Length: 224
Ligand code: SAH
Image 1 (cartoon, rainbow, N blue to C red):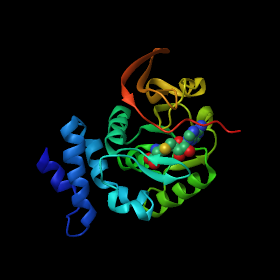
Image 2: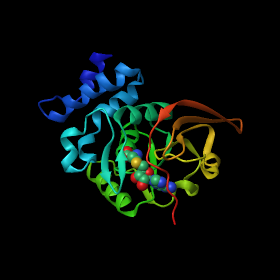
Image 3: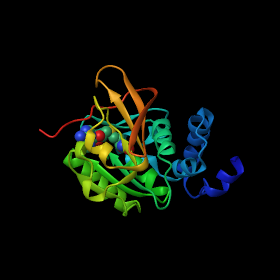
Image 4: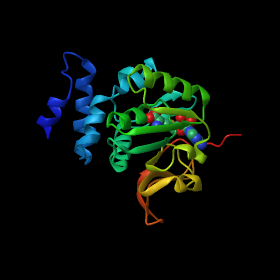
C-alpha cells in the first residue's frame, strides 16, 4: 500500500507540500483506519494549504481544524477523510455537499472523479470557494449560494450527501434528495453541546440511521 501511494504522488522535489501531505496521509489517516485507496489518494493530492488563509498556510497539514474567516472552519483532515470514505466517491457518482466553506472537501470529492455539487449559505465564502476551485483545476465542481436546508432539488437524486455543519435534525429535503441506496453523512446535535456524526442510508425507500462518533462542527445556519 505504501509503495502504491508513493508512486501516485508527485515527488517532493517538484512540490514541497507533497511531502507534508504524504505524512498527513500516513500519520493522521492510514494510522487511524482510513483504508480506502481512492480517499487516501485524493487526500494526498489536493493542496490543502491553498484552501486556508495565507496566515494559516504553514499549519495547513496539522491534525486539526483551522479558521477560514466569517467564523467558519475547514475541518480536520481526518474528518474530511472519513466523510469522503463513507461517501464512497468516484467516477459516475453524484455527490451533494452542504457547507462549501473553503471548498476543500468539495475538491477532495472531485479529485476522486465524482460529480460534485456544493451549497454555501455565506455569499462571500460561496464566491471565494468557487473562484479557488476553478483556479486550482476543479472547475467542474458546481457551487451555489443558498440555504442548504433545501438541498439542490434540480440536481437530485444524489448518491451521497455530506453535511459539514451541525444540524439539530436531519433536514427532510435532504432525505428526499438521497438516491435509492444512497448515503448521507451528517453531524446532528446542538451547536454548543454534543454532536454525533450520523450515517443515514436509504434502502428500498426505508431510511436507517446509525451514530458513528462524537464530533464538533460549526452550527448549521438558516437564511434569515
Ligand atoms: N466543508 C468545508 C468546511 C465547512 S464549515 C470545507 O471543506 O472547508 C461549514 C460551512 O457550512 C460554513 O462555511 C457555513 O457557512 C456553512 N453553512 C452553515 N449552514 C449552512 C446552510 N444552511 N446551508 C449552506 N451552508 C451552510
